[in-house]
Each structure stands twice: as C-alpha cells, then as structure tokens.
Length: 429
Image (cartoon, rainbow, N blue to C red; front, side, top):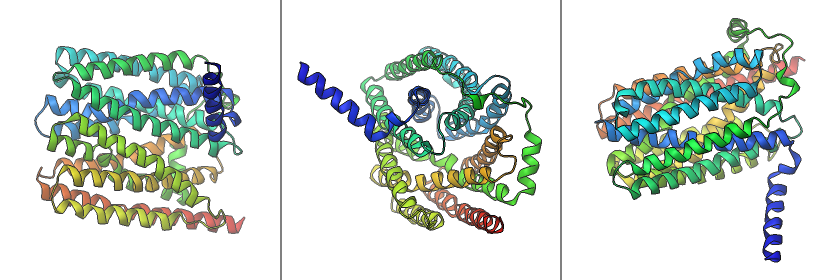
C-alpha cells in the first residue's frame, strides 16, 4: 500500500513538473481548475444540445437557428460584463456567469423531464449566449491577470490541456450514457452531472483572490473610443477582420459535422465518438503547432501555416462529393479538427499582437476583447444564415462547405496585411 501511494505521488509530481504547474501561481492553478469545470458543462451543451434539439424537431433548421442565436448574443454578454469587470472584478463577473449557467442547466433539465424543450429553446439559446459572453470576457482578463510574459506560454499550454481533457472525456461519456437508455434518461444523467460540476466551480471560484490588475484607476467603459481605434488604426482593423472571416466558417463547423453524423445515424454514441476523436486530434494539433511556431523564433511562418491549413480544409471538402456517410464524415472531422486549430490559434495570436501595439492597449484591454467578439459573431451569423437558406440536399451541403472554406482566403489576406503593417511599424520605431 505504501509503495502504491509513493507511485501515485511520483506520477502526480511528474505530471505537475511536465505541465509546468509548479511554475504557476496558486491563483492560476485554481483558475485553471474552474476553467476545466466550465469546459465540462459547456462542451456538453455545445455537443449534445444539438442532438437533443434534433430529437424534438424535424430537420436541421431549428439547430441552425439555435446556434445562430447562441453565437449572436455572446458579444452582448461581453459588453454587459465590461461594466461589472471595471466596477467590480473579473472574478465577480466569472461568478455571475457560472450562477447564470447553473440556472440554465436547472431549466434545461426541467424542460427535458417534462418534454417541453421545443417551446423554450429560443430563450435558452439567448440566455446561454449571454452567460457564455460573461464567462469568456472574464476568462480573457483572468488569463492575463494570473500570468505574465515569463509564464504565459506555460499557462496557455495548461489551458490547452484542460480543453483537450474536456473535449475527450465529455463527448465519449455523454454519447455512452445517452445511448445506454432508450428515452431521455441519458440526457438527464449528463445534464445533472453538468449541474453538479457547475456547483463545484462556483464553490471553487470563491477561493480566488482578485489580482491588482483588476483594480482599474478609471472605471469608465470606452466602447466608442475602441471602435474609433479600430476604424483609424489599420493594424487593429485588419486583425479584427481576421476574426470576421474566421467566424464565417467557424460558426458552422462548430456543430455541422456532428449534426450530419446524427442526421445519417440517429446515434448519439457516434456523435460522442466523433467529438472524442476531434478532441484527441485537437490536442495533437495544438502540440505540433506550438513546435512549428517556436521552431525558429526569428522566422515568422504563420502565413505559410495558414495557407497550408486553408488549402487542406478546402481540398478535403470535395471528399463528401463521393457520398455523405459516417466514414467520410469522421475523416472530415479528423482533418477539420487538426487544421482548424491552426486558423484559430494563429488568428488569436495576431489579434493579441495588434492589441499590444495599440498605444491605449491597457486602458482598452477589456473593450478590445468585446469588439473582437462582435467581429467574430457577425462572421458566424453570416455563415449560419448562408447555410439556413441552402436546400438540405447532399449537393448543396457540399457546395456550402466548399464556399465556407474558400472564404478563408480572406483570413489569410487580412493576417498577411496585419503582420506586414506590424513589421512596417517596428521598422519605423
């Protein structure tokens, strides 16, 4: 027994050392645990709310509208949260979001039990979106508060591991329990578990101590000033447009492949397996991208990697011309999970770089994340609207996927413009 305990302690210390957890502050480690919990119930909502709505409705229109509403109101939640962040703290805002999510999960559970979800899904989409916006603005602020230039890369690596764990565990367990029961019992079990995780998150959040960065000398909100900065600062404008173009594809592909698999199979277990595979590939892609980006710090190969990612995603789209079946959809999921990480991480990296170069970056830090979310949300909204108006036939589904991938050329162009402008600015200073 003593040897076994020592072995467990050895493994624990090894994991802590390898991940760099020992190099992070106590507050960051608490924050990362809370974030892992959030990702657990958020991932469940993201993956299985779509299959749940499919069971309550005919066709995919309801699912498209639900996701359109879900992504559209995130900036609204972020805008409202800026005031609470500046007046209170990012921790208070995070706690408010989790409390709101607890209410959402209780409501969802009740509606599943009484089988009335189809009457309230629009309200659920809007409230969930606002809660999501509240959380993510608090997340961005907390991430910058609890890390610095010396340990931020380690902190991000830990966050990526948390994301990978949630993406791997939740879909496979959710799919298993939902498929295990013929009625909605599996959904009730999973959403009850999500509710318990949310309770643990809110309890853990009260152990966080506000960082000094949360204490703003000026509590006012400068949304209009940030908007003017975007209009007149070309670097910030192009970096925001990157988010817009990325969002056109991103909003649809967050759920499309899982929905298509469920439409073909009516099997939540397959959806869980598909999301599980995507989670594993996301982790591998994040690890490889980190190696490629930091292989030669003097050489900026982000545009080259973006071109490779967009080209691969576009070419893979034509696989579905053969037939839309489970095998090809899972292959598409693997390709999408690997290369979409390149687009997502590189675009976020470029955006953060543009914020740092803004003379008023510190004062407009929270506002900049809000406006970024509006550009991303508008892109997602347009992408989903485009798919809503397409006929639900195999040909038009494939055509829509091809067009969304072609639009990502805009992501490459605006990324190149941003990096070129940054280089010009640096050469002048």
